[in-house]
Image (cartoon, rainbow, N blue to C red; front, top):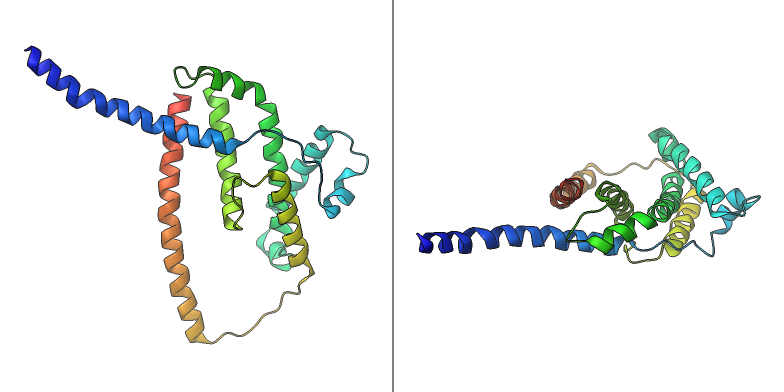
Length: 214
């Protein structure tokens, strides 16, 4: 009987332990990616002209940015087609939105890290922060900006690109059918790979949220 119990422990307990360690490692990676709140010392010129006048506090800047971000992401595709830089400006505002959320959750993060991984303190708040950061990460990846790049640098990159796109004129150009077909095949292939990657990432994120929210 003792041999049976020992065999059971050897077979099943390590599996559970490895499963827990896997999710803990995933969460540790996400915690590193969250970064730390640090208010930008410089903003793009266009941003300063729009939002810095009469704004002397971080709260004022972040509130104005959140409002503008909401307006930008609500605009229809027809507007975005005529204003190709619009959504890129929105990404810059999202960086500020995220920074503000990170600032608000500073105390929650400290409490969480003090007990992690033995205990889960403020799990819901940390899960929400990780989800927001995953959205920020997706935006950055779309434009080739590494998650390790500082928010200040990311904001400047977004704004510079958006300014450049806004200066261009949108024109309709006739394209050969064979080129369209090839482009469609390449696009479908890229979409398939992208969907697979996103599916894996989504599954990992769902596991993290479930673990933290219990």
